[in-house]
Amino acid sequence: MADPLGAVLWRLAGSFDAQSFHKAETLLYNEMDVEHFTVPRQTLLRVCRMAVQEWLAGSCRVCNGRGMIVDADNKRRRCPCCRGSGKWQYPADERMTMLGVCGDKFDKLIPVLDEAAMILELAEGVVTGQVSFQLERKQVNPLKI
Image 1 (cartoon, helix red, strand yellow):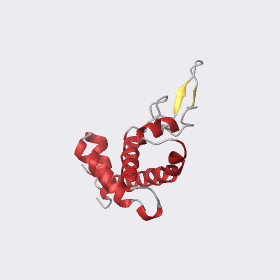
Image 2: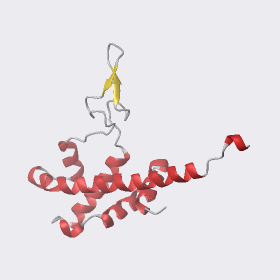
Image 3: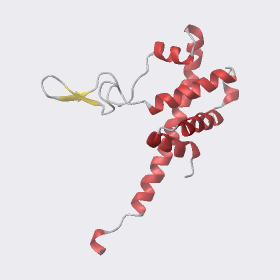
Image 4: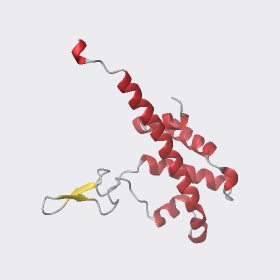
């Protein structure tokens, strides 16, 4: 795999092992633009841990990641909680508790959290594309069998 973080994320999603989780945290930290943010190293490490946790448990709690719900009239409609994305929007108070910060300190961490989430999504996307390409390339033509 060309993207080590993406490969570890795939491994983590499939196995939930602590070693992969720690490696994902470390790789994410190494990919963060550390000089760009004026936050202590320990805080940045906590942000990386939380970002990996949010990525791992990122499915919407209302629609279970489907982006759609069935209403009382048995009609499918877009999930009002995630607005159809299938991703859980962690509330600020929950994130503050996870990071051990409050108020202004949390507000300063929002850009850091956003960058961490973006790096994880990009890494996952790269590996997903690579795996899809490899699967398509290795397909057996059923007409030639």
